[in-house]
Length: 335
Ligand code: CA
Image 1 (tube, protein in one colour):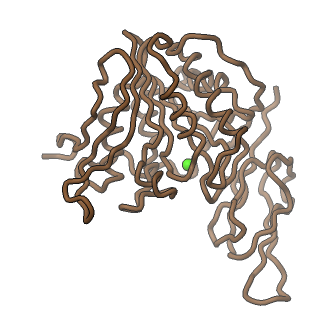
Image 2: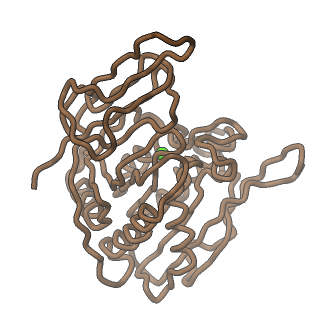
Image 3: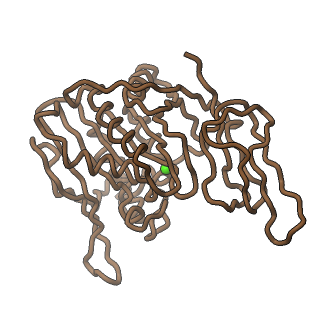
C-alpha cells in the first residue's frame, strides 16, 4: 500500500457535514509509556449552516505563538450557525503536543508542523497530523487562514500576509482577504524556506491562503490579541462565510521582495539592537552589535541591514547564535 492510499489514523469526533455547532476532537492514537492505548486529542469546532464555502482556521501550527489560539478559542465560543453561510472549521492548536509544551516544535518527535507537509499517514505524530490536513481538511476548504506570530525567538510588527502565486485570480482573492483582515501592516510575503510548508500545500491545492505574523516573544499583548480576534471575523465576513459588516482598519502595505530583506548573524553573543521595530532604516545602516561574551575588552561585531525600509521583525532573545535571523527589513509600499 502506498502512503497516499493508506487511510489516516486520525478520526474526527465531529460530523463535518452536519449543520449546527459541534465541539470535538481529532483523535490520533499514540501509544506511549503513560498510556498504552492513549491518543493525541486535538480540539476543534465546526460551525455549519447549509451550503456555502468552507473556511479552515488554524492556530498553534507552531506551539509557542499565541494570538491565533486566543482568537480561535474565542471564535469557537461565540460563532453561531445563524451567522454562517457554509462552514467554519476552527482548530486553535494544530500541533497540539507543541502547543501544550509551549514549544515551536513537537516534544514527541521534534516535528516542525510547517516543514512536515504533505506528511505521512505512517510517519511521526507531526507527520500524521500534517497528512490529515493534506488529505482530509484542506480538500474541504475554500479559504484557509493560518495564524502565526514570532514565537519565543522572533518578534514582528503585527501583519497579515499572502503570497505571490502563479494563479492571479487566487492571489487577488487572498490579498482582498488580507485587506479585510485589517492588521496594522499587510504584507506581500517571501518565504525563505518554503519546502514542506502548510502554506504551499494549501496553495498547490488551489486554496485561497492567508497567514499572519502578529507579534512574538512567546506571548500575546492585549493589542495583538484584539487584532487577531477582529481580523479573523473581518476575514470571514469578507469571504462571504459570516454575515455582517467588516470593521475596516487602516493598514500599511509592505513588500518583502527578496533575500536582502533578511539579516543573519554570523557570530554568537550578546545582542544590542541599535534600532527598534517600526523604525525606518537605510541600506548599510548598523542595526545591531553582537558582543563576544567570553572575555571583556573585545569589540562587538556590527550587523548592517542590506536594504532600506521598515524594521519589521527581529530576533527576540538577548543572546544570539551564528545563523540566527536578526532583522527583517520590508519595503514600504506607497499608497
Ligand atoms: Ca510561526
